[in-house]
Length: 331
Image 1 (spheres, rainbow, N blue to C red):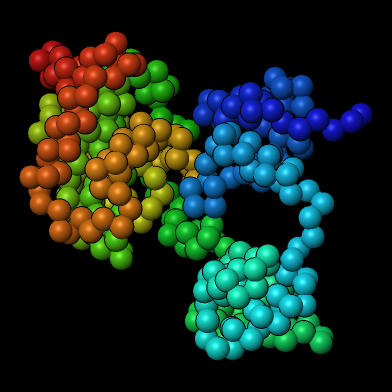
Image 2 (tube, rainbow, N blue to C red):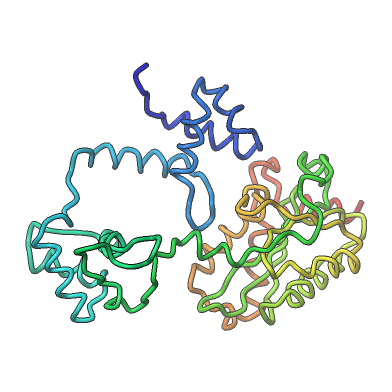
């Protein structure tokens, strides 16, 4: 049977299946595809930083690959190889080399990522020694890793094994968004690993609480959550779902002081806290990446919180989170 590439509609169906926690086999059965093909498509297009499958990006990547099919890797060109090696030895970075090559050699070009791949391709992953007859160019890099460290791998050290109940044991009613009082929590990072902000979002209404963190410890996160949610009655403090970061290791404090059930999402399953992730994205419109939250006054965070909570939402019938949450407060 002739292989058929995934269409953008099929990729969107894969994303819906993942959001609905369907198995790979279930998604494949719906599409009339083999489970192996679906699994390969997901793995090939997972974001290395957040482990999300985005169909539009996956489709665009596939189209670019199709356009580039049959092209040769230009780093095999001896002129480019010599240029790269010479300038690495002059303490140039791969990015500087890639940018300058097109100026010095019109018609030639290479990405800095291809240069990194070329450098580490000369090294045996088993012994971390250069292959016979190959020059070891790693000493000329500013960061002299013995082997290439993937972006996904860097993040893995930050995760911990959940010390609390898994989202698998969370009451089914939470998924239905039929009541007010089920919360999702996360941390939005600051520049240079400085303390960021804690975000809490109520799933039914989308009501958000943004709190400046005094530090990066689990205690700081717990204090932020307790200080905000303790303002609300017990009737709208049912559950809280968080990720597996070490900042949430103080979950028992939150659970005991707020009388709220805390659950942990699966590692790299940010869609299990989709309301929170979406809200964090809205916050980034006000405070883009590389924002130093230690320099942002509380009044500015409060203003952003107010604007988000008073913005009409389609899924709420164009009511605002504040209006829906306010009804629950009065009840």
